[in-house]
Length: 124
Length: 124
Image (cartoon, rainbow over the protein chains, first blue to last red):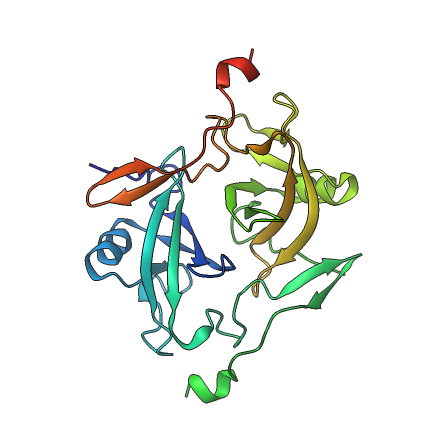
C-alpha cells in the first residue's frame, strides 16, 4: 500500500513530469490526495492548481493531455515523478514543449526551448 | 537580470536535479535566495534543508558534490532545473543513484534503481 506524505507540504506534493521517451523534464506541478487518486484511476495526469484552487486535469482546455506511462516516488515519499506521453507535443501554456525553455546565461536567460504552438490558437 | 519568484513558496522554490549526461532525474530539493546565489557563485548545488533549517551544500558530508552544468528556469520563474555532474555517481542518501528508485506497480512499489553505495560506508 503506497502512502504518499502529503503532510509535509501542507497537503501538496511536487510532481516532476518527464517525457517518457526523451527524458526531457516538461514541467513541475502539484498534487493533493484527490489529484493523486484521480491520476492513478484515470491514467491521465491530474494536478491541484494552486492559482485556481481546484483539481486540474492537464489538457482539459488545451487538449494537451498527459498519458501516464510510469509513476515513480522518491526516498521520502514526498515527491512524485511522472513519465508521460504528452499529447500535442507541448506541456507549457506558453506553447513551448517544456516549461523549462530558458537557460541562465550570466545574469540573464536565453530561450533554448522549442515552440510547438501559439497560445492564441489553443486557448480561445 | 534574473528574478526568481521566491514569494509564492514562502521563500523557497523547488529544484529538479537532472543528470547532465543521461537526463535521469536524480532528486528534488529546495532553494531559498541564499542557496540560489551560492549555487551560482560556486558552481556547486546548494540547497535549503527544510529538516535542518540551514543551507546545505550537497555532498558536504558524503563527498557527493553536484557540479552545475546548466541552470534552467520555468515559465513562471518559480521552479529551477539543474543539470549536474554528480560526483560519486549517486544523489540519494540511501545510496541509490536517484532518489526516484521505486516505481508504482498496482498499489505497491518496486525498486528499479541502481544502488551505488552503502550509506554506512559514507555517513560515518
